[in-house]
Image (cartoon, rainbow over all chains, first blue to last red):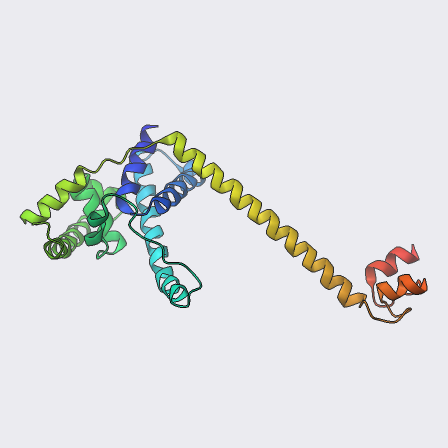
Length: 153
Length: 92
């Protein structure tokens, strides 16, 4: 139950729409179910689950971005309806995050919101620590600009 | 920086309560809906295949003795040229 809570917390911060959260949550647990036989115990179970969550979440957002153009076209042609992306109370919170790419979004959430150390993030995301540092720096710069634009001062 | 810090503080205050039972029920509901849709699509595809089969080998308006199932029925003909399944059934 503890892991489910942990996964849900990250998922809820990563995507805005309730349905996307549920889809992503489901995908994470499907990924865990598929990958569990390959778990060799080299990392702790929680780190391993977190890594799977992070990878699944990044892929989820990339996939969604791929279909964004198609969705817009379908809406323009009146084939599909406009789906209101903000169905949560914290709608303005997600706006600045929208400007980040999936990896930047994840690194900022892990570093600044979840307060993970850079080494831990590098371990979770299987990235060199230098990449984590530079991505975080870039992401913070983008976010700062966006936050000022949306009046968080 | 103040704006950014405030923003992050706001994020940290966001409560993301996990309600396992509710979420599980929703996921189960979605899977059963998806399963029903798959079942329907499969049944529809099967019907289409059967209809195309009938039309392809046993054109409804083909003359008796030339494969038309309606014509065969009307004229009581057993000759169904070109229909591998019916030929097999009738020659057995």
